[in-house]
Image (tube, rainbow, N blue to C red):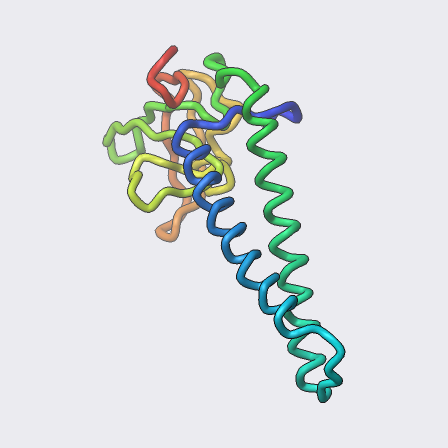
Length: 160
């Protein structure tokens, strides 16, 4: 990645917002169990261990919520994706070694419903980052090492 704020595609932003809503709902559920289970009662070691586990889960949820909030804020100020070289948010048309051409979007999170999304940390995504139209990239697949040629790029909204 570039080291500066990275743009967010609309798909990635929506996925983060869904995850954030789910995490906040889960956090509230865990927090309620801590409030309801507390008080002056003295429990056995199993109760104490269970409460400690819920506190740890609450901390994990809080950390992920903070990370997503920060990423959404960063993505809001990043501006549009660079159209000179492949980066997060880019839409990239590639020709694979077998001659098949396709357009993929480089994102941060994989969307099950979006077969064109390639995460930046996937083998193909990592290989494409920083490259320009005309470059050939190589990467590993389960079937072995392969290559693809970057034919064109723009941002994930179809601009550029």
